[in-house]
Image (cartoon, rainbow, N blue to C red; front, top):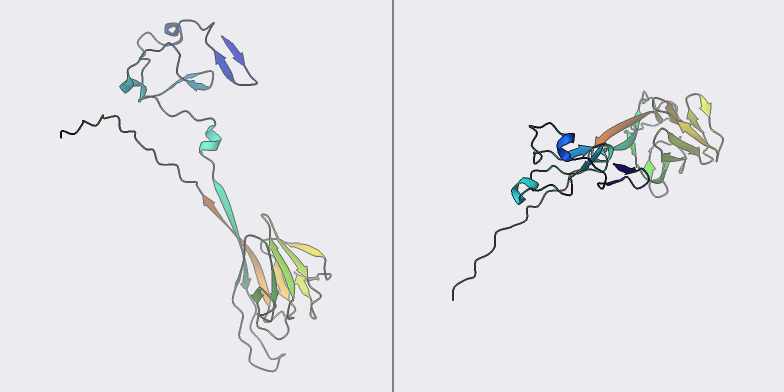
Length: 209
């Protein structure tokens, strides 16, 4: 038997008789396809009728490809501030949690007409920071804000990107009204298999006029 590893093809010119490869009582036309050295194939000289051939299983190039799954990542900023607004001097509502889009970069700020995501707190700058979601971390860049952007207790340098890992605390200038916990959520998505379409083998009878 000749095996070419580059093209992964089989030559049946020097194959021994099929009867020596299988048990004497084995049935060649079984419900499963024949596997020779890891290759799922049908011998060339195998004689089967149409019904028996349909019983052979589907041939897959790779088991890993057939069972592949996709992972979608969602980043969320969970508000954890105490809502104390006494330092502002006027009642201020607590901001809600913010979901970061999975593609592209978004700006965070106080004004809706300037920022993609709004934190309506006076101590937050009009356009405060830039956020971009990655697979393993969240990229945060301070946009020269007045009160600064913090990851934990470290203040970021304006214009210099920094990585915020899941569980990090992210503050946009106010530890009471604009402090968030970085959270990461993963969702496993299995691609749907294409539906099998059975061919109609019955011949249509000619209609009588």
